[in-house]
Length: 591
Image (tube, rainbow, N blue to C red):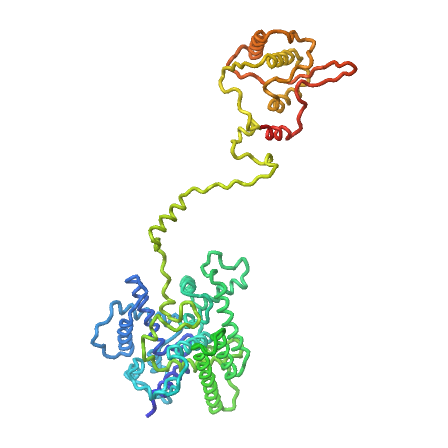
């Protein structure tokens, strides 16, 4: 009687040979017992999130759903234990994940074998449903299974790495090789996206998952399309700046670049044994980079690399003997429509077949004896930020609800700091500060009164009576008399400029004595102060038409001729016309 391991291999080989008859893709991969349980855990957590709001699941619920799933798919009598709530939704989510990832499980392989087997060549049923159930649940003796990685007897050889570390490292190796065969495998992307560390934690994986869901594509296609758009799309086709994946451009680019290097090795090396050895060596170099030889990860990677290289060489030899034994000396026909790498380069086709056979053998590996090591969130650290736990990666980060976890004292202090008015920093000004705009004064006051020291003289409509020395009033009255006697045809432009520019600069009190008197002056310096004051009021009232409600007009400058013995000099009573800007400078420096 053949061993169970040989019969399982015959089952999978027959499925692999005839699967294009029932499947859309020849590169469909197979999930083993451990892979089936991990997918079931994700499906159960997704259903719990929809109905309970938490992406969590207990180990006991996973084991109970695992038994009911196997009994249902193998059409065995249902167990006595009650099924979980929403069990139908769990099975639907499980099957949806398999279909979306272009994968099948061992139960589906057994079901399709009955349709695909050749009546005369293949046995009717190499494995019974009961035997497959015992194999998947781990209740069968593993001594019948030809697997060198699981010794049937206790070994006295001391291993430098734990079994959990070796299992996690081997899973990463197979996931990278799985992506070279089936790029739709979301489980393989989850196990390799941040191994080795690329700063792609839960937040990055969640952004990739949301991008894949919105585009209705696989995780790998979402990552590659984003990176290709960044590298080759240009400004017109590049992703928007608000795209969440832009925060993880470097890590995603490194991931795609590493897979491109593996694809290049796959296409350039024609010999499957050499190509497989180079692929495994490249994965090993990425994992152990920066680690010492005494590290547990280093030892596990070395051991896994050696085992995979030997197994790839053995599979290649077996396929070569099978091809040479069945050869008829006739040239092979053109590849069928579902052949591997159809309508593409021939390089790498044989290597892909070897890798698919290797992955099928990995699916037949006996299940993990300790389910807690497989499904626990505390997985070995392989260099990533979040570890290798699939459940943790698929769980979206918690969104902040607005409640601050800080103490009340810190929250009150931060609120007070926000409400506290900020002091306005005054800009430093140079010695030419007069050229800057005055921010303290309104614009209308700056325009009407160039100097901040000047204020409007007409605060009240009634004119103010001032008591000034006699000499001041005498000089002012003399100037007013000369301005009224001056003909209007004399320099109107000068008078207008004197009003607009010179009036602001003319001193208010006539402290300077009058140097000369005009011929039309009817006043003399010897008159008393009271008569001069009365006459000044009378002249002001005559000029304003007797109205006391108007402010007094500004005085005009007049020019007088002073006779000096031997010289004739014509001087203005006030100052000369100012150049542009001189008035503002003068008013600024006046104290």
